[in-house]
Amino acid sequence: MKRLKAALFDLDGVVFDTEPQYTVFWGSQCRLYHPEHPGLENEIKGSTLTQIYNRWFSGPLAGEQAAITQRLNAFEAQMHYDYIDGFEALIADFHAHGVKTAVVTSSNQPKMESVYRAQPGFRSLFDAILTSEDFEYSKPHPDCYLKAAARFGAAPEECVVFEDSFNGLKSGRAAGMKVVGLATTNSSEAIAPLSDMQISDYVGMDFQQLQGLL
Image (tube, rainbow, N blue to C red; front, side, top):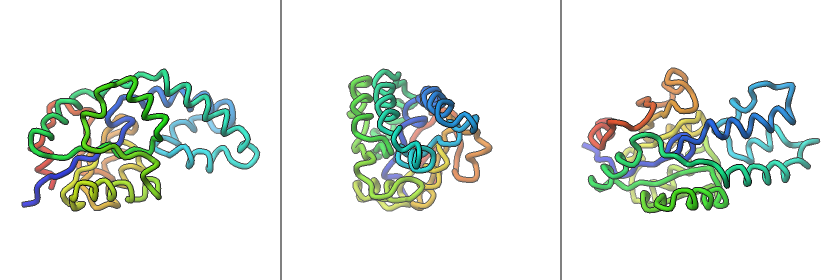
C-alpha cells in the first residue's frame, strides 16, 4: 500500500482565508478599468498576476500595470492572514506521522514577506515554501507540484494536493496527485470534477483520512 509522504498546499483560500479580501481589491480594480465586465474579479480568481495582466491589462492598459502592482503591494501589506479552521492541527498531525509539508504558491517573495510579518510562526509549519520565483510554468501546468514532490524525493502518487482555484486543482491533477478541493473560492459542486475530496475547512481532518485517499 502506498504511504502518504507529502502534503502540498496552495496558499490563498487553502492555508489562509484571504480570498474575500482579494475579491474586494480586484473588484475595485476591475470596476475602475473594466466597468463593462461586471463580476470579472470572480473570473480571475486562481490566476497569477502575470496571467491577469496579460489577459485583462495589456495593450492600452499596459501602462497601468505598475500602478496596480503598487496598490496590490500596499493592500497585501495590511491584509489579515487568518488560518483556515483546523489547518494548524492538521499540519501537526502530518508531522507526527512523518509527512512532509510544503506551500506551493503563485505568490511572489514580496507577498510572502507580508505573510511572514503577519504570521511569524508560518515558516515553522512547513518543510519547504515554493513561490512563483521557483517555477518555470504557472498553474494549471503541473511543474510547481512536481518540483515540490521532487524536493522531498516523493513520487506523485505519494502526494496530496490542497487547492481551491480551478487552475490549482488542474495543476494537481496534471501532476498525477490526489487532490483535495477547498470550497472557499468556488462551490463544492463546481470543484468536484477536479478533486478527489471536497471540504470547507480542515476541522476533524487527520492523517488517516488523507492516507485513505491513496
